[in-house]
Image (cartoon, rainbow, N blue to C red; front, side, top):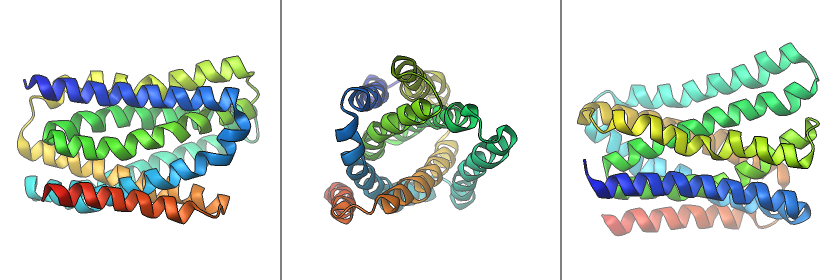
Amino acid sequence: MDIYTVIAVFLASTLACVVTTIGIYVIGKHEEWGRRNTVYFISFAAGVLITVSFIHLIPKSFSMNIHASLYLLAGFMGLYLFNRLITIFVCHKFGSSNLSIGIIPTLGIGFHSFLDGIIYSVTFNVSIFTGVLAAIGMVLHEFPEGIVTFLLLEKGGLKKKHASTTAFLAAAITTPLGTLVSFPIIQHISRSSLGALLALSAGALVYVGASHLLPAVEREEKRYTLISLASGILVAVIIVMSKV
């Protein structure tokens, strides 16, 4: 077991937890600033996540597993179907209750954050460089995720203190928990299996960037979001190309 990989993956997942917690704190204490600026973090993170997935994670997974394209599709569609179950089937069942407004979407965010922890385990086991690339975009999107989780819970009827605590448990602590559960297993799998998991992870990240983050940016219609998106793309390209 490479001690540097162990340290890197747990540092990354812990940092993600901390950044999510900061997002929850900021929106709780400085709600107006959070609402005004969150979209810029979202657009930058979307640029990084999508770019890293297409120019590094996907090609890397294809070099490790000949069936990577199938796993890539499974990762994208799997997360899509899960979100459909949360937003349509479950919310329809509970109608317009507070549960559907706050708690149910938060369960989806919690599951997504748990998957983030697994993605850290996978990407850092491929290489430290691959893990760091994925972590840049993922950590950046944790900040707005903390804010969104808090707002959903508050809209669902929870008071600020309870919304903050629940958001922390759902969106923050679940990431290192996902890493803790998955890392011992992923350490002992073959290169081909690791490639399959990397393709699954890439599919999930493309889905998050293209289907969650970018539409959120478009809804805001803020003036400088295209600049922050382009900045995220440029940063990812520079980092990847500097390694070639």
